[in-house]
Length: 446
Image (cartoon, rainbow, N blue to C red):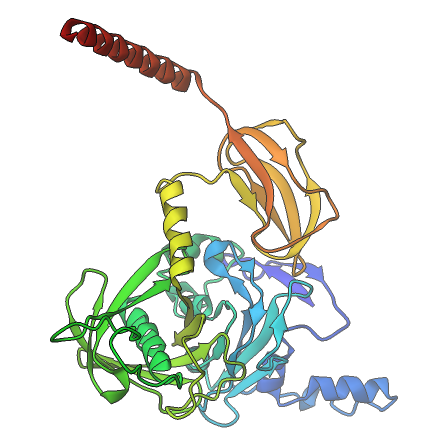
């Protein structure tokens, strides 16, 4: 049974719906009552009599559930696809206090064909505060690398003052979302990824070249040149980390971009684990190279060569960094040159694999910035794609067609405003004046 209840007038409530099936939240009921609802559902379906009476049901403590989704909350909760590379959903926080309902496995591909909810984390406590604290701790230890999840967002929501106080309403998320401080990739993550890339290269089995001409360490008389690792960030940017010294031998000197030189060391203590010490501060990370298969990393069992992608995470947060080759770095540099900073993109791309369900415009139509062009359905959700600039639209897809992630679905040819035309005319006039002046000067000089 579902009702809407007024916070100002709790005696007033309004019926919404009744579902004769188990809801997604049924583990909360099971944890506070001790009654296995799924078991009783199966028993009743088999013809057995329900022997649990209402008087037998006693409530004990408080339980809270968090739904883990493969999505990106900062991008309007857009669903995300990927492959689970490293999984640890059940950190040790006390028997019987945490429950995880999940079908995830390492190596499982999360596609766009299904709902983005991938697991549920439920925590019990003697009261609401303890239950939420326990749930927060469980999510802090939740690891699912290789895919985007909403775990960081869930932790921000759990620790919001209104949520803690139980002041909930249907507009809460919309109000709170702009003030949530989502974590960004910092120097520590960049250094950790760079050192892992270096140590992987040090142990790729190729051995030391016989002379300086075949070496890739920038040999010179005196100290060796720093090893520079270019990392691609999720926003399309490039971060460069310089490393001097041999990572496997102990502390090295590192420099992020044009920053100061700092002391760092790296340890790989066990499966899917990386420990970074940067200027004396130690941080533990979960680690998953994208091309290493099931993760079983130890100092003596590293994948051969530098990984193309590396996933790092801790505290329920994760990030993806790409170890750029010269070619892939050049592609990013050229893309940045071709597009001015802050300029709107005239190409409208699909955010993920899915199916075009509707097209709202036709080829040659004039559209405004922000106007809906088409809709893509993926993971049981419909995403409206809009024009970022005003102009004439060219549609390259039809309703009903499947699309790939990042596929161009429409292109906007920006319109030239009257002011633009006037500016162009003024520019041409000045150019002609300059040209005539140069011609006159040339004639006089002759």
